[in-house]
Length: 214
Ligand SMILES: NC(=O)c1ccc[n+]([C@@H]2O[C@H](COP(=O)([O-])OP(=O)(O)OC[C@H]3O[C@@H](n4cnc5c(N)ncnc54)[C@H](OP(=O)(O)O)[C@@H]3O)[C@@H](O)[C@H]2O)c1
Image 1 (cartoon, rainbow, N blue to C red):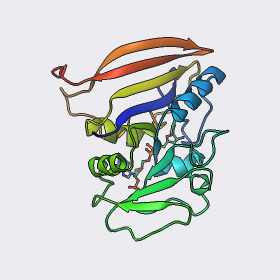
Image 2: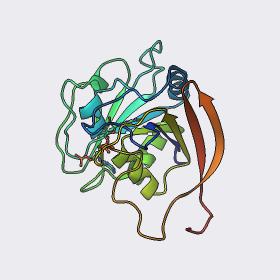
Image 3: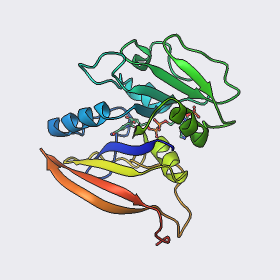
């Protein structure tokens, strides 16, 4: 069975996940950061797109967990743009860089898998993760990556923390960017939980699969 996919992100009250400079902005409350830490701990793997690696340089680890207990870090990187010194390549956890078939690049500190011609083939990647024993996959962003997971029908849960701030900017990224669905198509969600977490609110949705498009 493919991994259970949980998308998790933090957006502002005006629906942005970063500002117009596309750099990380602290949107989560301390209470939400604790929740994210717990969710990471309960996940077998954490996945982001390469633009997030370049923009934010995250470790994608849980502090206090040793290398073997930290979730596997997975980067979608078709053309090998992950910088040599990216923190995701450190020895705090294992890392898998998923590239396309034509990409020859390798990294010290990461295992490389190749799948897909133009973009990393997410269905092939799910099969690869399944064989590695990944049952729960947490997708942390950014907007292009989350779009691809929704577009391929691979999202089971969508968790979004809404922080009490406004960033504005017509080019600022949102939780789901990409091309967007054609008119008449959408992903229907069922609101499963809402919870105030400090200064913001967490919304947890389950993806409804058998509902005809709105
Ligand atoms: N607030 C939050 O919760 C949060 C969390 C994470 C990130 N962010 C923000 O999100 C922004 C980055 O998001 P982004 O949308 O620009 O990029 P992204 O989702 O981080 O990375 C997208 C890139 O991944 C590569 N990729 C390879 N295979 C792919 C596939 N099948 N589907 C999608 N992408 C694939 C593509 O680059 P190649 O074609 O070169 O491979 C693509 O451009 C930053 O501003 C960051 O701060 C916010």
